[in-house]
Amino acid sequence: MALDKPYKNVPGTTIYDAEQARKGYHLNQFAMSLMKPENRARFLADQAAYLDEWPLNPIQRQAVLDMDLNTMIAEGGNIYFLSKIGATHGLSFQQMAGSMTGMSEAAYRDMMLGGGRRPEGVRLKDLDGWTPPSTEKATTMRQDAPAKYTSALFTSHVPAIGAAMDLGKTEEPYWKKVFDGYQWTRKWAKENTPDVVILVYNDHATAFDASIIPTFVLGTGAHYPVADEGYGPRPVPDVKGYPEFAAHLAQSIIQDDFDLTLVNEMVVDHGLTVPLSLVYGEVEQWPVRVIPLAVNVVQYPVPSGRRCYELGKALRRAIDKWDGEELNVQIWGTGGMSHQLQGPRAGLINKEWDNAFLDHLIADPLGLTEWPHMEYVDEAGSEGIELVDWLIARGAMDDQFEGEAPDVDHRFYHVPASNTAVGHLVISNPVGRTGLADDDAGAAESVDEALAPEPAATAAVVNA
Ligand code: DHB
Ligand code: FE
Image (cartoon, rainbow, N blue to C red; front, top):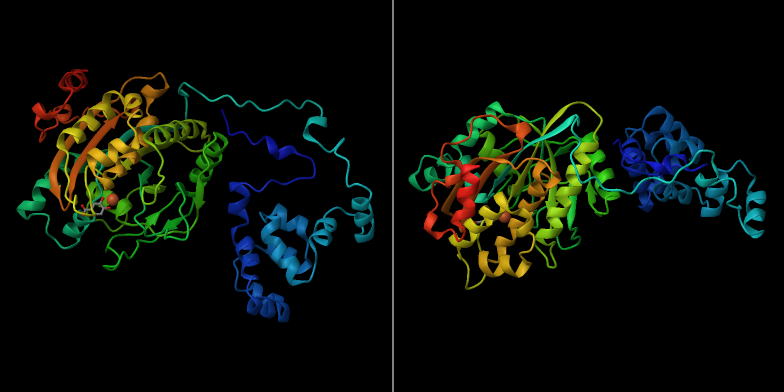
């Protein structure tokens, strides 16, 4: 069940993966600094002094001074980063590659002229006892997994909710109606604090501008500052990451055919901080580590609900493969519900559609994956597309891996908060069962039942 790293044993080869990248982070970033002519000049003038500016370990530092590429690579360096150091010294790629082989420059050049190194005997498949790695994907849960996915939490992340808290307006009648829907959650959250929250949200042209549009971003950093979205940063704590677990997830998910973008440094916007505020209130420090998972819903094409659901399944396989310390893991899905922030149709709210979405999210997530993009935009407004984020947490739940259906602990729906319909749901896998379930949970307290298109399905869940 452990992570597959079949490439570890390719002879004479160090593969640069998330683990190596963590080890070599500062070494590689130092190398990148040499892309500026003024930095190259300073480095060449006094290498030791320049290196003092970078937190390299002593082995890395000495390897740079010795221009010892093998050691730099063992210490987490990657050849494309390190080539900037070689280039600064005037070395060609052939000189750099040759320097790692134990051959003289002339002998290496002659070998290349003679057709290059033959592969026989230096391949993995030439090693005794080598068997090809399995590419099978788990369809069932790992029962003894040290990391347990206990509960999923879904919520809107309207920035005005954060502002209402930051400005002390939560008791005003308009806002009280919103915050009342989170009272159950605050109590539950105090008694059920996980070790880590994988927080799925969408960046709102904050960390990512028009220069880069990654579809799925996993935060593998140690710490994420709170963004200034134009109003000044929210007065809330910065967010602590969990690099080891995040790197593990990245490794497994990418091997599972999802091409994530990994980000070590980024600011986090209201999409991530408002849910934390809603659940944990005003605190000096967030009580959980957070792994941000940002989904592009700004520039089309955006990922489909089905793709998000499948990412959730890959995420669960990754959680199950963790062999480290025991962890209580929650996955949150944030954004939505119906809202449109642009054009003459701004202000659109579709209560019926939102509640059908909640019903299906609870009882029929696979069916929900059939709903195309157009459905979200057409029915729930252009920004209602944020709801695809929710499918990730749901795809990872036990019942999608032949386990039991989740308990519905709490459900809330309210219009409006700013331009938005607020939706909020807490559902738990059996391992996260607390007995705290809201009496009205599945009954969707502030929802007009007559408006829900599939009351039978809702009732089935309530009575389950
Ligand atoms: C609003 C809602 C959002 O989800 C968002 O990202 C920005 C604004 C709003 O309703 O005002
Ligand atoms: Fe949003």
